[in-house]
Amino acid sequence: MAEKRMLTKKVTDDDNFMSLSASAQALYLHLSMSADDDGFCNQVSLSMFKAHASVQDLEALLSKRYIYQFENGVIVIKHWKMANALRKDRYTPTAFQEELKLLKIKENGAYTMLGDGLVAERLPDGCQMVAERLPDGCQMVATDKNSIEESRLDYSSLDSFCGEPDEPSAPPEEIFIKIPLIDKTDFDVPESLVSEYQETYPALDIRQKLRSMRQWCIDNPTKRKTRRGIRKFIGGWLEREQNSGRFDNQPKQPKPQQQTSTFNRMEKSGIDYDSLFGDGKIGQG
Image 1 (cartoon, helix red, strand yellow):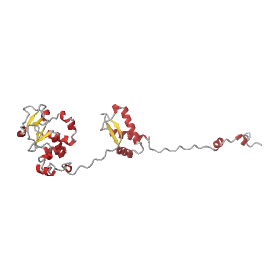
Image 2 (spheres, rainbow, N blue to C red; image 1 turned 30 degrees about the vertical axis):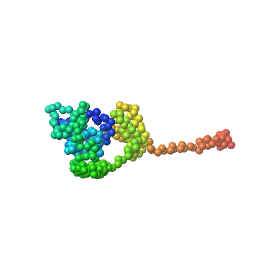
Image 3 (cartoon, one colour; image 1 turned 90 degrees about the vertical axis):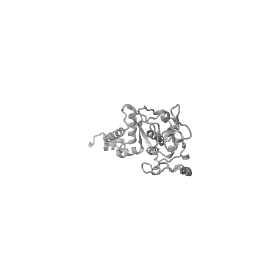
Image 4 (cartoon, helix red, strand yellow; image 1 turned 180 degrees about the vertical axis):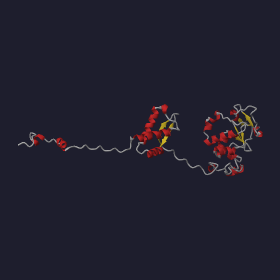
């Protein structure tokens, strides 16, 4: 069996496919990688584990007809022949010949069913057991068709196969400024990083320095930094500013008052020295 698999952009770039969740798209990828040379895969549970996919993701692929599932639980990639063609000396026929007989290939290379060989296109109406135990010891997803139809399977309790439900993600952190990089993307400087720099360089106005760095990168596009080197660039800039002694947050010292002599004070007061001392000849009678 070949080790390389191909995907066609006619499928993966289609709006219908892009509307699937990220985990459902990942599941499609892993099912394709695990499929044999005719597009059949009997490693559904392992593929779901690798993709961190849920039952809803498998159901979405079935309902949108990206895969078909047979009585024995084996699935086939509907658009397999559109992207994967092997030379005869490298081709290994599928072991699922009975299932292959239930399919025909349309003119565009996609599989379609000949009759009613498909179990169901939606899991709740006839899903076979996905996995008795997943590789890390997770519990069984479903036991059989009857148990699913009786309980109608509460999907809200199956957000993930293993462990507890995912914790809600933290809200995105507020971004103070974006510094352009050499690859024409931006490096986001969050408020937490601003606080970290301010604590390290208390004498500097960190926000103004970051504005200066951003403008420098705008004015010097060929000298912009990579995402890997931008933190070093920022740290080096702040370190040089700190060592220069030109501190932004240093309190200004009041100007010392100029000492004035008694004579200067008297001169400023407008005293007539001639009338005070006569003709200026002090001590003459």
